Image (cartoon, rainbow, N blue to C red; front, top):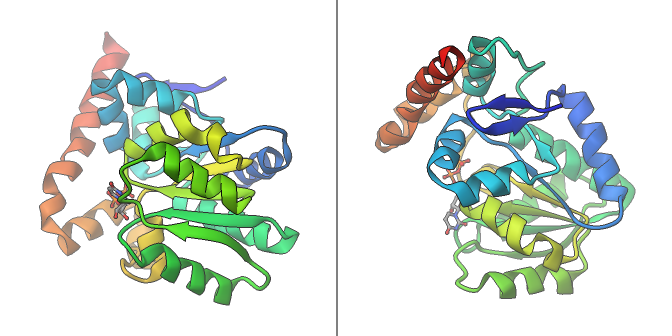
Length: 238
Ligand code: UDP
């Protein structure tokens, strides 16, 4: 049973449980995809039915960000824990390196996916990079074809929301990969182009605040967090 928050159904799993499920999906027949919505993405889905269907159509819907955990608590349907997409993705990449499964990196500005792949290869012995491409392509079908031709077992799809969720829902099967992970700005972090918040901010659930002081132009996006909590509380009463 998924926990419904404003129309998005979240899987109620710990990180360890989510990873166990991710490994199963990587070995299962067919193509599966994982999404990691934060409050901003939930708000986007409320305004965009196609994005909502793409998110709910995922095989794993993981709560990225403390806002979703608070939202679930307000609604008295608590989720076990936060499952940050970047941490889930890192562990899945490590698993692929250990088991000889290949990974495609799709997304971010030109050059970033290559740099991310190089740094991850240096970090995880034996990691097989099936291919890389930036996320500013025009033809989604062609992009799916690049992944298919590479023969990748897993693909990181980092195009921002809701572009990555729509791509995975529409073209996931055409990639031929077993597992697709929609991970937003993660390639920028893997490449070292963007930094994740220092541990203090992560531990105190203040990652959103760190992002805001680093990049004040995100204020419009970050203001969706209180809006999301107001909506979550209102839905409970209604
Ligand atoms: N991006 C992309 N193609 C696009 C738009 C965005 O590849 O058409 C990339 C962008 O370069 C960045 C990521 O998608 O690497 C989205 O980053 P953002 O910080 O918005 O993601 P978040 O993790 O906050 O959802």
